[in-house]
Structures are given as structure tokens and as C-alpha cells.
Length: 187
Image (cartoon, rainbow, N blue to C red; front, side):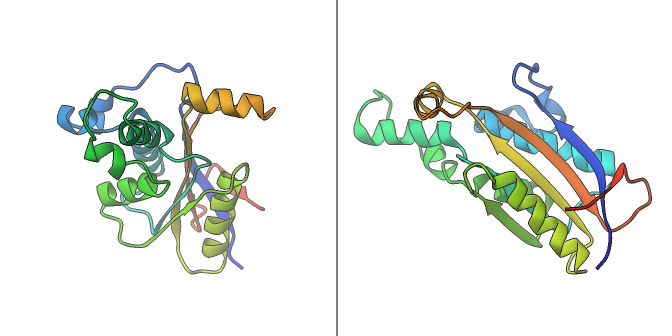
């Protein structure tokens, strides 16, 4: 078993000002992306830049609810609750694996790509997967993310279930290489 090292970490906390998206997106791209996708791609880009890695061997994401805002908009439009016509973008960006695939496409990553949606354990599952693959020698580098957004409807539903709702925009880079690592990661 090889050792696994944490090389970088980039996080946007709730209440943090939105970063300057222009460092990652054109105005036209940003216009077509929801807030969660922008935050996911931006934090991932920053984490990779900090680690000095252009394209990781794997992109592994954890999300409890995926792009819930797009899902809600699409379902409201289908149900006729919105006066707006159906927008294909809301449909295309409504699935849980949209986040990992958007990041991989932008990076030109053709390696392992996975999304974990294990409510309450999504990030841990993604982290364990990356750690195991690096430790076993299947890959050398992995971008691991944890991305969730809150909508008023989701926050209300979770609060009614006694769950403290939170947003997440966190990206970390793991590697088998100890050079420049922040710390060794053991699970």
C-alpha cells in the first residue's frame, strides 16, 4: 500500500463573497451555469493550481443533493408553476453527476470519474475511493470535491426533518507523491 498525501485544499464557505469567475469562465459560460457549478469548477481549478497539477488521474465528487436549484426550476416548469418555458439547461444540469462531468470535461480529464451521493456520507465516500485507488497504485493523483447548495425549499424540508442544512464548496487534491504535500492522509 502506498502512502497518500494531501497537496491542496480550496473551500468557499457560506457567506464568503463570490470569487471573480472571469479567472475560470467566459461571461457566456458563466451565464449558463448555476451558482453551484461555478463554485465547484472554481474551487477545483484553484485546488489544482495550488497543487501544480493540470489534469488529475481521477475526478471524484461527493454531493448529497446535486444541482438541486436546477432540478427545482426544471420540475416547477414541467408542472407549470413557472411562467417561463422549459429551459434545456435546467434539465441538463439537474443530475448529481453533472458536477464531476463538468469539471472533467473542462480539464480534459479522460480518466476515472465518479460521483457519490450518499446523503450525509457523500464526501467521505469520495475521499475513501480516491485514497484507496492511490494507495493501491491504480492512480497517482485525484481531485476530490464536496459540493452542495441550498435552496429555500430544500432548507425548509431538511429543517423539518431536524437536519441542519449546509452548503459545501470544497476541493482537495490527493497524490502519491510526498513532494510539496501539506500532510499525509490516513483513513
